[in-house]
Image (cartoon, rainbow, N blue to C red; front, top):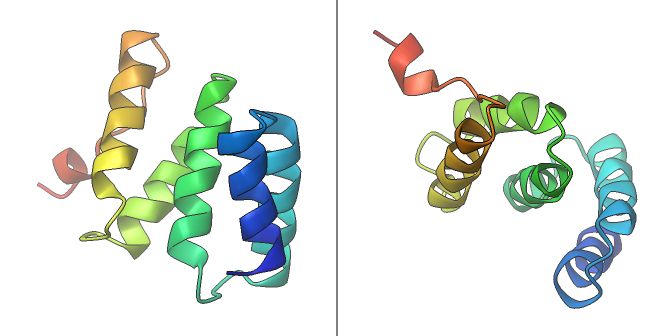
Amino acid sequence: MSPSCSVALCALHRDHDVQAAIRQLEAYHLRFPSGDLAEEALALTIEALSAFDDRAAQTFADEYRRRFPRGRFREEVQRAQQRFQERGLVIDDLDSRAH
């Protein structure tokens, strides 16, 4: 795992430092936009931004679902969408746009 992603994971899950996680994930996205851990980085970014009710999570969720339609974190992305819908911060459902 890249240093940025592993630090972000620890910051988010162990230290509960969402801002530190977001900083590390931003660094990863800038340095490795199509890196080996792009799927993991996107999923962690959505999780971190969702903690702040940040609407940017919608953009990352859309990107995740576009790039990884059968990704292993799809369920987590869908749960983030549900939480946003419950809070009135709707993330568009890409499946409904495909019709």
